[in-house]
Image 1 (cartoon, rainbow, N blue to C red):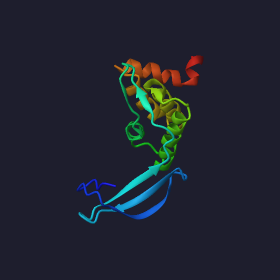
Image 2 (cartoon, one colour; image 1 turned 30 degrees about the horizontal axis):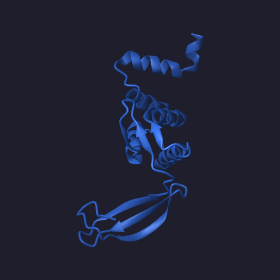
Image 3 (cartoon, rainbow, N blue to C red; image 1 turned 90 degrees about the vertical axis):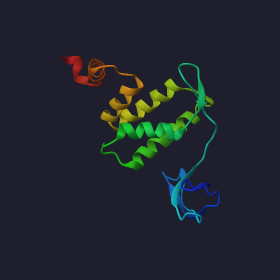
Image 4 (tube, rainbow, N blue to C red; image 1 turned 90 degrees about the horizontal axis):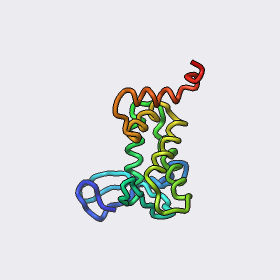
Length: 154
């Protein structure tokens, strides 16, 4: 594993342990060249997924890119990091279990929104605002009003 600090290819594993409900291995590593320490995660990957964007462009699925956008939506919310990781792993497993290698970006967005709606409504609205490209406050108002079950009785 290459050192992220100095680029040395010869790093050493100092500690390994299960992570994320035993669906990943967490490895603490040490670089003898620069004395840097860092963590890596090893996960099972059932198949290589390709994201098909709405404009037809294709790119390799990037778990970290999806995780970053989810973490941004979850920023400053009272949700444990372990629960977020479990949600991300569940989304990836769901995508891999579709049996398809080409996954439309729209499907990924919908699955992420569904998962966020079960965990935190604020994070759900934050993610939706970017995913659905809200342009002004009316877009937020309309979306949030659809979340309120009592709005039908008014």
